Image (cartoon, rainbow, N blue to C red; front, side):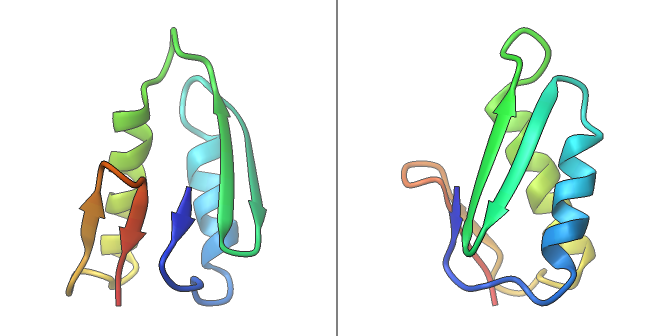
Length: 78
């Protein structure tokens, strides 16, 4: 999963912590603008993880122009 712009300092850690706390999520790795999320398909689905990311970004103030594109798995925000 890639974001269209780098997240502000500290946001990656918050994202990593929030996703790691989800049931079924085994590992979250952040490298630059890419995130790798390993999860158990029997305990979590991609839509749940995507919804958690969107909630987190909205909570961090990215409400304006937060658009999720399911086809490319990119999250656009400003």
